[in-house]
Image (cartoon, rainbow, N blue to C red):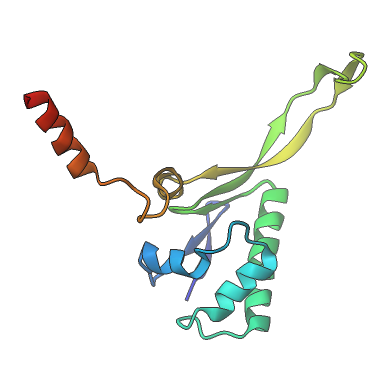
Length: 148
């Protein structure tokens, strides 16, 4: 199962059972937008977890509440390979009302931020494995054309 641990004021999540990307994509391949209810359904449908829909709902609620509470308290939640949630201070600044053009003061604030991890960025960049162009064949065709 998944484990959460606190290390140097950072919440770390680990998953000892890694599933191939093709298995993960098969579960949600037809969905263009996943909401909280869809995520609960995916968790409940995962036979490896063996949990009910109610348990999946509680698990997701606990995870999201933990992330929100940790970031709200000034901490950071780091999930290796996925990304990091943290808060960021923004300074007070002057701006303009886009409708009227009047200057206005924008107060300093604290905003939540998410920084995607390398694995997440790479997965989004390449897309599903079935859509990724074969690199070896493309390089060979380019070399063959250059030789002609």
